[in-house]
Image 1 (cartoon, rainbow, N blue to C red):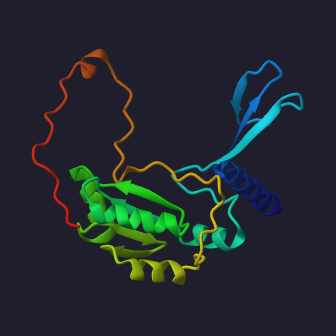
Image 2: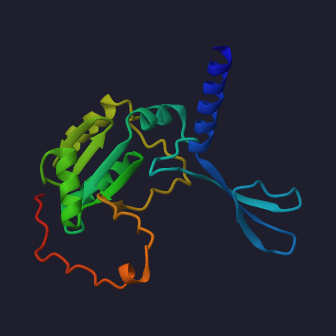
Length: 201
């Protein structure tokens, strides 16, 4: 029994290590060559930068101060936006001005709208999720209250070198399947759907 428990403990530790965020080292060698690597550079290289890389679309909180890292880990923030949504830009600016780390999901296709409806129950933009809490439509006072309730600081506590992750589709396209044979690859692509997706803001 002890051996089984020890094995499970080692397995879980290994999985945690695999899921941990990596670090990217940017350095320049004696010959002036710039190198990017997940391995620390040799002592002879001049180290320029160390960046944390988050895995699985998550925000890496390793360099955050404790009062920001806690809520960012327990109640991560995501927003759903659309390119033609002016109020979405206001919501995005408010979050950045307040130093709130967030992931942005863009709504452009019918698949994105289906995902938005699955998350929020409607098609009103923007949508903000704070942990399990969901808010449709932008109201700066309500959003700030939700963030405060989740423990986010009242002032910007993000590190100066923090860069927000690039926006991604709300419903990312599936990874391309391996081609079974040449005949399968030669099949014509299905005709694209007509009509613009509809949502409100």
